[in-house]
Length: 313
Ligand SMILES: CC(C)(COP(=O)(O)OP(=O)(O)OC[C@H]1O[C@@H](n2cnc3c(N)ncnc32)[C@H](O)[C@@H]1OP(=O)(O)O)[C@@H](O)C(=O)NCCC(=O)NCCS
Image 1 (spheres, helix red, strand yellow):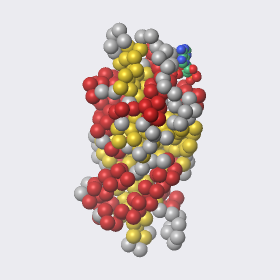
Image 2 (cartoon, rainbow, N blue to C red):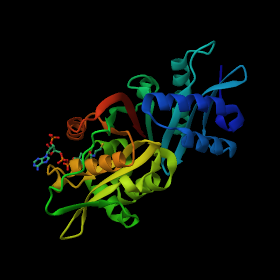
Image 3 (tube, rainbow, N blue to C red):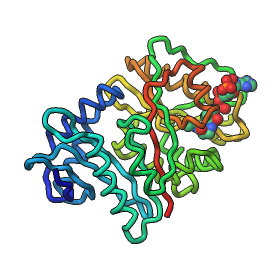
Image 4 (tube, protein in one colour):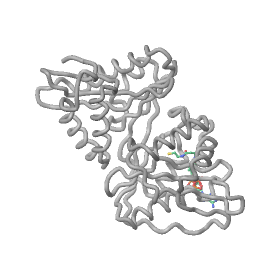
């Protein structure tokens, strides 16, 4: 088995591996990975996707890629096929990751590396990260069946929950930056730390199909009626024809504990249910106890536990 630069290959070499990966995303996360897989194949053909392939007798059976975002490297995916006469998958995952991590840590100007590998159960791929000085944060993948979603109760005299609009960009970025100040999630994703970073985060969620397709109809903002200021936001993407995924939910610190988070989630869940969606999923850092407790109270179930890894050089 050899580990080779991904840019030696084309979509023809990678397509059947990505088809396997699409099945695994569907089985484990009820996520339709087809759009992401097509995007990966386009980048592979353009020879612009940095990464590594595991090759056995001329056939690719595993790969990992990363992207550069300014002075940060983000590991985008790691997938290794299993079974038959193939080498042990965990060992190959560790070798691919070691190559990716070494490349990123040695890239001039790269001072930070982030990775969130949803397909890999907590601990499964931790070793190459912890050996290279990464910190590790447990994250939960949670799911809510939508069959019994109720319309949100209009219980806030001063707050209006209304649909997301393009004009909310700037104020939503400001809410995100304030909501995550000193928060564990701004250690995992450093975009939350600045207004420009939060705008980039929003742009990625709303305009690019990496994390499903943004669904403006089930995305809402909470607005203070008198001052017209935004105090909370929930963003939802479609990750399968009938599955929504919350990519962001936050409420300003001074407005918390009044049921606004719950109302935002209810608005999203009810909207999706009315449009024949069957499930709503989200991810949350295990240490974010307030949020985890809220989701559990609303009926979300933990389906998987995975890890987020961060290195700061
Ligand atoms: C998670 C978050 C969105 C929750 O928003 P929120 O508006 O405070 O949520 P709610 O008020 O609906 O519920 C939170 C708590 O307030 C309580 N609460 C709800 N209505 C209340 C009221 N009228 N009076 C007093 N307490 C109330 C709820 O019981 C709940 O407490 P519990 O979780 O201990 O049961 C908010 O804490 C936040 O923005 N955190 C930072 C960003 C973040 O972590 N986002 C989630 C990432 S996955």
